[in-house]
Amino acid sequence: MELKLLRDGDISVVSLSGRIEIEKAQFFKNACLEKFKNKNIVFCMKSLSFVGSSGIQSFFGILNELNVSKKMNVKISGLSPDFRRLLQFTECSSLEVHEDIDGALKSF
Image (cartoon, rainbow, N blue to C red; front, side, top):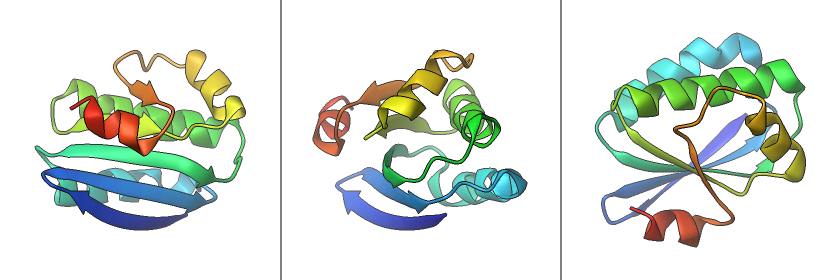
């Protein structure tokens, strides 16, 4: 998975591309805590490849955990229909999903 970071005022936008590797989930969580603790952040998943349900559900779980614990304020944008469907089957009710980055930015 590749990350591209942009800033819009006090909001960080992380565009994800490639494939999520479940083995790197803990590394991803630690990196988020180090870089984005107490920040507003949008994860754009528009260019993320399908990785199988366990990989994406683990990823959603991490984002949900960070959001629920108030360690960061997380929004998601650009979910493919497959990812959106998988998100419905997770217990990640605190994750706010937007069609695009602009919508997510306006929601803060």
